[in-house]
Image (tube, rainbow, N blue to C red; front, side, top):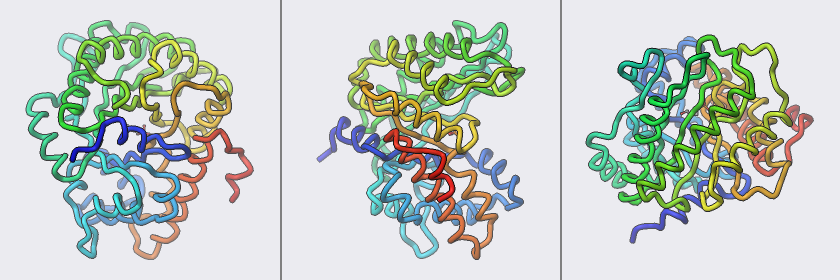
Amino acid sequence: MTERLEDIAQQMVQPGQGILAADESTGTIKKRFDSIGVENSEENRRDYREMLFRSQDAMNRAISGVILFEETLGQKAADGTPLVDLIKSAGAVPGIKVDKGAQDLSLRAGEKVTEGLDGLRERLENYYKQGARFAKWRGVIAIDKDRPSEGAIRANSHALSRYAALCQEAGIVPIVEPEVLMDGDPGDHSIERCHEVTEHVLHQVFKDLNSQNVKLEGMVLKPNMVVPGVNAAKQAGPEEVAAHTVAVLKRTVPSAVAGIAFLSGGQSDEEATANLNAMNAIGNLPWPLTYSYGRALQAAALKAWGGKVENIDAAKRAFTHRALMNSAAAKGAWNKDQERG
Ligand code: 13P
């Protein structure tokens, strides 16, 4: 019997839990490994991810789903256990990144469109057989003085909605991720500009999801938070970020959407936690707000691991600490003192 999309989506955004984005492509994980001087071999990628998925406390208490790269979906732990089984036995849902990455958008210098729709129906069928019950597709929108163009917004939004419909047809919950970037060149835009662009993008995305018949109860939105550019002269604290982000989401995201799981996008670990906490502290929101972080969940663990077997316990502790801090933030129950725990 196939599980209902709504039930899978509810499981992904259950109270106090969130999603671990461990779906770095082989090229992206190379950048992460380069930063700690570890060779980007298949075995190292496996060992690192196995360490995360075997962090029992974090996985049981704070992680409801894990986004995997295709290689990991079929990979086995050192003792032969499929990594997907480790995730399932911790009560989390295995998911899969299905997009083929952001490519240059033609005739639109400096803008990207995410590709991967061709053959996606067949790929989803296989991913389902391999145990994936949700998927991710990320579209990226860059901000500068002349961007984003309406053309880039429409192209990305259209692809996201086509992807989401194909997922639901296959019994897979789509994570719809339209990311308005906080970095980029020059990356000095204000929080107000991020607010304006994010609001516009999300309006378009929900218009397109509707036109493709996507069932809102069976999807999860993965947006950026509304923040100033990384190089902006004026940065913003958690209350300001929370007020802008919640205002934009209330204007654009129907309350039928199962939940909202943010990306971290280049925020520091503690910023990503504090901002999420401030939003949940507002209370009375129509959807659960949680995390689907990559860097902000993994950075400390990656550093503690450093590619060495003898550091695995320390890396698990670092990951567990970060996951539990975010779990508290998803309930609006985090404070800075807990960071010293
Ligand atoms: P970050 O949290 O590092 O932005 O990654 C989340 C993600 O899945 C990007 O697609």
